[in-house]
Amino acid sequence: MADCELLDKCGFFKKYGASHAPACQGLAAQYCRGPKKDQCKRKEYRKKHDAPPPDNMLPGGALLKE
Ligand code: SF4
Image (cartoon, rainbow, N blue to C red; front, side, top):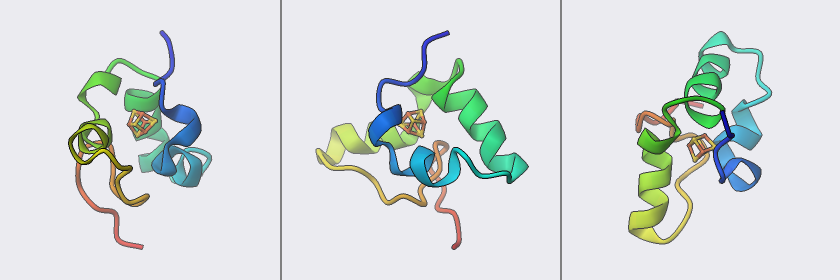
């Protein structure tokens, strides 16, 4: 399965993709490198606002507390 086309410029993936936190790994596997990439809320946000979402916005749309 192809990776998300935004992988290289995605703040979430850059910041948390390499994280060892199991939750982030799971999300990256499901969304960024998996079958849910077309349901990603970050992608939707980028389209709607014509700008990238905050880095701490998760693919599911919730904001991660930092
Ligand atoms: S978080 Fe969404 S936009 Fe970012 S790389 Fe993953 S699937 Fe793509």
